[in-house]
Length: 453
Image 1 (cartoon, helix red, strand yellow):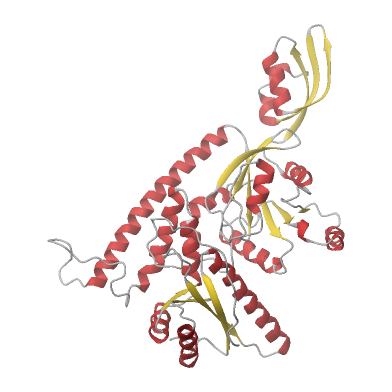
Image 2 (cartoon, one colour):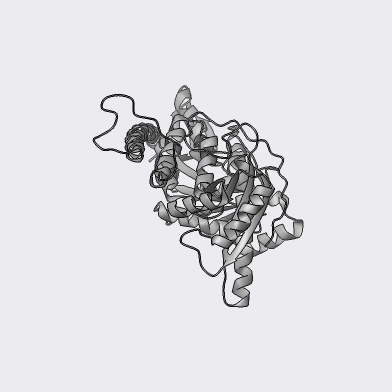
């Protein structure tokens, strides 16, 4: 395929100071970028067509990722091959074509929609004559841009250093400092070995700091568990509308953006359900195709909120033509976290982007399924149904129906009934309130002395 012009008008955010690798965000202005995708041939005609479309969709997703990183994309190139070249990924001939395109468009950076080995990375940079980064490094760059909390910054830096460690050879002066004084270098140690030793030392320090954060998070989680509140985790593909849905349910004011991975740091808020029970809703980082394993490992402390969840809300951008493939990627990540068997509610979000007949067809196909809920975080459609479905799916702190006899003067316990449950019937007899109420089991235990036998 030839080169196609793609306009980009988005302005990048300023890079945070903690990042350690060069990226499209490393300068104040948008960096001109050329995208390169690689597709594999298939023998049957139908499979070849579907594969080519899948690879084009992958390149379009890479375009969105690069824009989220603040790149000015001047063109893209998709090559179809029988097999990947172990030395250069795309072959020497194709590298000459990429070099010519990069020089004619004055492009200092090429982004490849594939993970590159250290050898492939070095060979491509040598042949093309400009910097080359792969899909993983681009995702790490976006995560570094959006990390706001100290925990998020540590997790991103850990993933970046683990990525960089096997790729140090051939980097010249990058990420290096000259030894200055006695004890700086070991006997006969070369500059590359010094860099590796320094990175390993930094990795150990970051791992220790993350472990401390993990213990603090565990302590906070235990404090929350002292008050029985179930955890509900929002998960889904990036840009599926999780944060917008989170804001609509909790009024939290979390950042929402069309950029991929706009929300990185987790947020937890309490939500009151129709039964008057309260649950904790957690907004987690979005997933993406081929999410780097190092990044999943680094963010395991954050993703523990998903592992602790009583109910998982899988949010899907139902307006996306690729929602089925995106759902499959989310399921793969949940499987890697060991929560694929956890109770799950499928939230089909962004129905405001669908035509009326498409919504009607969705409702018809869902039939009597209680596992799918159609919502629009933008218009508020379906939110009341979603809360009702969460309420019905929460096995944590189940509801019980009680008959209570509370003295009229005991305002505190009566307020507890009103705050934590629903009063179904009430009357006053002989200075006592006779109530029939529906309460969470945790609240009912506190009112045992008033229960009518």
